[in-house]
Each structure stands twice: as structure tokens, then as C-alpha cells.
Length: 110
Length: 112
Image 1 (tube, chains in turn yellow, brown):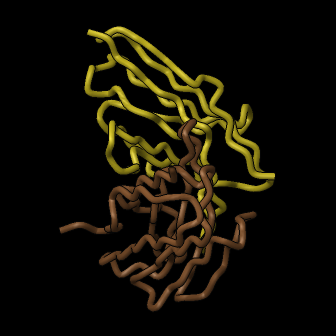
Image 2 (cartoon, chains in turn cyan, orange):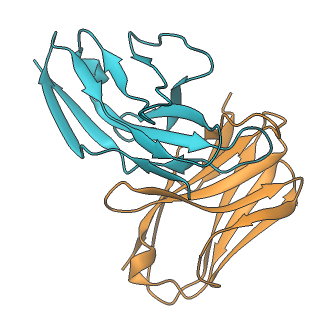
Image 3 (spheres, helix red, strand yellow):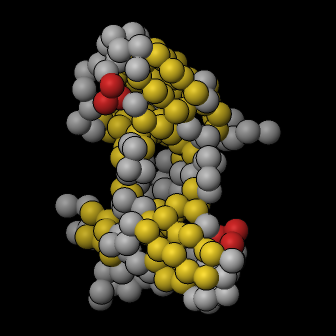
């Protein structure tokens, strides 16, 4: 069964502190992993995907197949990073649905 | 130039009414989705259409009926609205073979 677990519902850090949003997944096969972000009252937008292995807005995420994790990290959090973050997975190719975790609300305090 | 657009953005209606939400995408994608985000911000897929054909139909009450007149449009019609239908409904689109999805701005439905 496909499942995405984000153990932290809320995460609060101070500006300039490192931040890590945890994501674990369950999937029989090789999924594609994504992080989506939703700023206040805005649409959901893709932050990054594991196959591109890039850094967006200072965020990185590494797929660890052994631990079935795809944690999102940023070394120095900014106030504008405050948002809801969703980890998601999908089967490779086709029109596979995205399965989302329950989301983590990140608050970066000044 | 909006890629995925939904109308209306807000919808307040009484229990028992029938309402529709429209979605259009100008990205040339052939696959469209409806997701529901509940009060706890949990996102879950409801339906997916590929080239106007229904390909994903999660456990959703029959009161919800999607309609895709062409591959650029996917509308959601809801009959006999209930209080529990209050949520934000997101439309999304993607290209077959590419799993990245683009989302609309959401429709906040409130049933009173």
C-alpha cells in the first residue's frame, strides 16, 4: 500500500536556525518523491522532486531508500519559509495519482 | 496567465443544494485531478481523468460527479450538499508519463 507519513504536524523554529521536515514512505516499487509547499491562502506548488536532485529556495531533500525517507532540509530558515509542507509520492510514469502526507506546518519566528 | 484556474474561489451554500466547481487548464496536459483538502489540511485525491476518461475514482460518495467535456476541463458537480463536504477542493493537471502536477488555487466550499 502507498503511504506517506509526516510525523510532525507542527514545527516551529527561529529565523536562521536549521530546519528538517521529516517524511517517510511506504511503496512496493520505486516511487517518485516530491515536496509541495502551500503558502498562506495560495495554491499548492511543487518545491522539489527527488529525481532532479536540485536545491530550491535553499531546500534540499535526499531520498534514502534504505530508510524509506525523504526528509526536507534547509540550513538557515527564513520567515518567508513559513508554510504548509506536503511530502508526496507517485508511481513512476503513467497518470499515477499523488499520495500526500498529512502535511507539516512550518512556522519560522523572527 | 494562469495555468490551472478554478471557479469559483469561494462558495457558500446551504445543505441540500447542488453546486458545481469548474476547472480549466491551459498547459496542454491530458490528465486532470480533483483533490479534497479537509479542515485538518489533509489532501486526498478524489478523481483523475486522462483524455476525458475516468481513470481514478477513489471512495467518494455518489453525490460527487466529475465531468470532463474535453481534456482541458474537469468540472465537479456535487448533489445534495452536506456539512461534511465543507473543504477546499483543488483541481490539478499533469501530462501523461510525467508525475509532476500543477494545482489550481482551490475552491473553498462552505456548507451551512
